[in-house]
Image 1 (cartoon, rainbow, N blue to C red):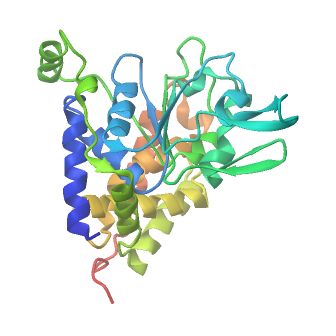
Image 2: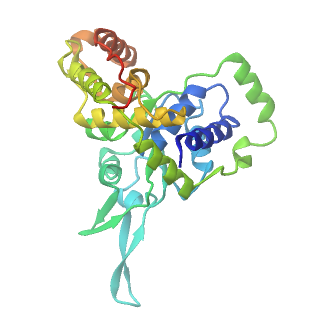
Image 3: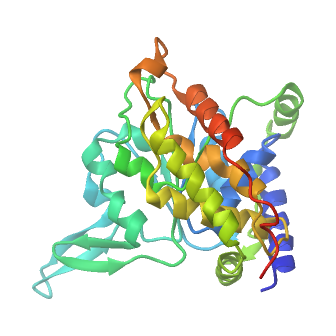
Length: 324
C-alpha cells in the first residue's frame, strides 16, 4: 500500500469516527495514529465526555474482531485473559479465551479494577500473548487496547501502576465540547445513537497493510538523535523524579512514523516528534514533590509545561527530512 492510499484510508476512518464524536478532531487523529503505530491508547477524562464512545467508534470503523471489558473492583484476571475449564466428557482441561482475544479490545474504566486484574494486561500489551496454567496462547494480529479511565480523584478508582502506564503508547483527554458541538449533539442524538449507524470503512487486511506502510516511513538519523535527546532530557530534568523509558523512545518514533503516513508523508519531521511528545511521554513522567507544590491531585499541566520547556531547549535538526 502506498502512503497516499494510507492517507486516503485514514481520512475515511477519521470522517467515520467524527460522525459520532463532535469537535474532537485532534483526539480522533491521535487515536488513529496510535492504532496505525500498533500501540495502545489510554483515554483519561471525567465521566460523560465521550471516552468510551470514541473507543467504540474507532473499533466500529474497522471490520475486525472487537472485545469489550467493563473493569470493576470484583473483576478477576481470568475474566480478562481466559481460564482453563475441565471438560468432563473428554476428561481434560480446555482453554476458554477471555475478552483480550480480539483485534481491538476496549477496556472501559480500567482503573476501577484492582491492581491484580490490571496486571493481567501486562503480558498481553507487551508481548501479544497470554500465559495460563503454563500454556502460552498468541493473540490476534493486529492487537490494540483502547482503555478509558477516570481521574484518580474520582470515587472507586485505583491509580495505574507505572509499569501499566508505560505499556500505553499515548494518553489523551477528551475535554468538554465547545458550545456549537454540544448543540449539534443535542440535535443529532434525540432519537437514535449515531454509533448504531456506523459501518466499517476499512477491512482488517487493509488495516494491516496500512500498519506495514507506516512502519516503512523514513526517520533520518538526525530525527532519531533529536528524539533520544528529548527523552534523555526528561530523565535529567530537575522537576521530574521519573523520566521516560527506552520504550517511550521507541514508541515516540513509531507514533511519529504513523502520523507522517496519516498525512501522506514518507518521512518523519521534527514537528511530528514535537506534536506527539505530550501524549506519548506525559503519562510516563512523575514530577518531584517540590515541583508539584500544593497541586498533588493534578500533575498534568505541570508535566505538559516541563515537556514544552524541554522541546524549546532542545536544538532542532536541520535538513532531517531528506533521504540519504
